[in-house]
Image (cartoon, rainbow, N blue to C red; front, side):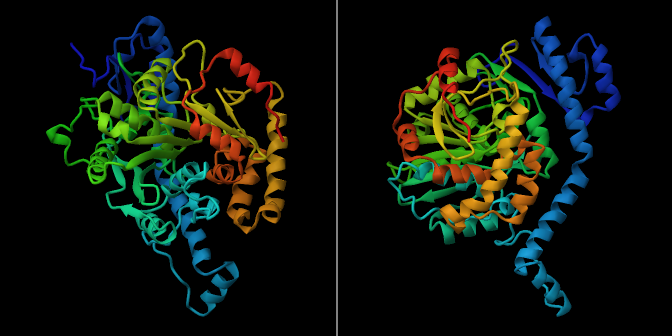
Length: 492
């Protein structure tokens, strides 16, 4: 059957909601995966079939476990967030106890414009750094990470922060987007307008800690591949708005027009806004999963030939972003977006962040690879521009010891940094107890938090940001240059 460029000529689509543990085990002895009714696959050779079978078993098992844990995980997260907000609304735990005795407890409402998420309590800063003004080389990066962090909050909180604290325009639209494969709205994002620099900021939310469907998206190694774009992580594509049975049509089919799919809703809103001002630019940003969506958004614009929008794209800013595609996708982005339209793509990596090193850049399968300009920051927030983050697949000789000592340093650092840099860098109990102490056991996961990325954009050397913002020649990932640069890296 002929496949147009908006569909896949090869794909692996997993359906964990339709598979039992028994079926996953039976898959080990299955001759061909396409004989099963819980995923779809098209045109794979024997080698690819073997690789995909192994990945499918691991992915289906993880997703099945997450779906079973979805309700208790959500319940725990809601109770934890309610408790954190209850304490905050009543000033502190002692005032909460006092207000309880007086029967004057302030009860938070989950959808209110001052109810903060768990991610928000990890870093409670909502104001932009007043020292970083438009024209400053740090400005776009600092604004991008704050927008990426804000995307974790509810719509009321986002609107209030954008309008009251940032003094910008909140572009009103539905911030919950439909996933056609999970059949729910677990993708989130928002748009704001900064009049001072005449730029729209498109921000995608990352993985919520207690949202099993977000974790399913991350673990979903379904792949989408066509001759133009290469092979791309299917879970991320689905979250952005991949249309069931249609792929990426330029316009939504009639039976899907009532669905609020992220790519189509944001693209159409952007078109409306840029038509109002011929000089308006826009940037896309996101943390974690949000970073992956921020990279894929302009890729689909290029697939659809959206020249007018791509000419207005100022830059792509991602923080803690995982790998999203193979070498062919890298070439597609470089040729069709970065080079053709002069778009900056700044990929921020903090220290031992594990997520930026996933999925692994396996030389055998070559399924995933990074590209763009990597801005790497160590635990002293000293930045460097590299072709690839150090230890790109995370593991290395004596790495566990080095990461433990680094996590110990970060725990001590949170005590003295406010004394050196001011109260804006004081970390709350949630950050210290949940993240800093857990980092001693899981340093790679703990370094993924947004707080350190915010600090990196504010405390990193100006020279790094000036070089990154002005550069038009993107670093290539040659093995030789990678080794030369990594040999010069110094850790605190």
